Image (cartoon, rainbow, N blue to C red):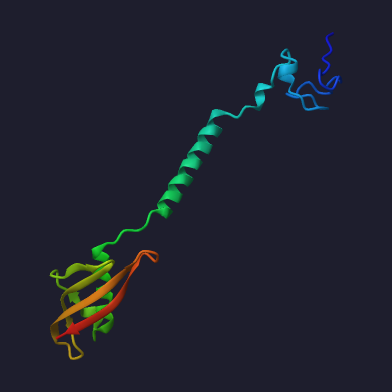
Length: 152
């Protein structure tokens, strides 16, 4: 029977199942190449695939959160439309014409104008011109209405 004595600490390791000498922590592979490594400690391939998938999904989530939102002129018109509805006598009867226009007038500032048909308090349908200005707030990811006016 062959005994393996560590060349560094001159002691026989108590458990040869480790990859190192337990008293002095020398690597057993270099000292004793005849001691084979335990291959059952390897993780199965599906674990590596699963961890890789989770890492990729986390990176995509982080990238999506770091990407700044983009300005949308339809959202600018919607913000002005909501402000116009708040100022009408009967907002449930309001119908916006398709002729509204949105123009960028400055850095993140848009001008919106068009026509809206709505009833007054007496039930008569009136067409009114509206215009407004909105500011794009990239941090809040929304438009802030700066001004709205409605002309009859």
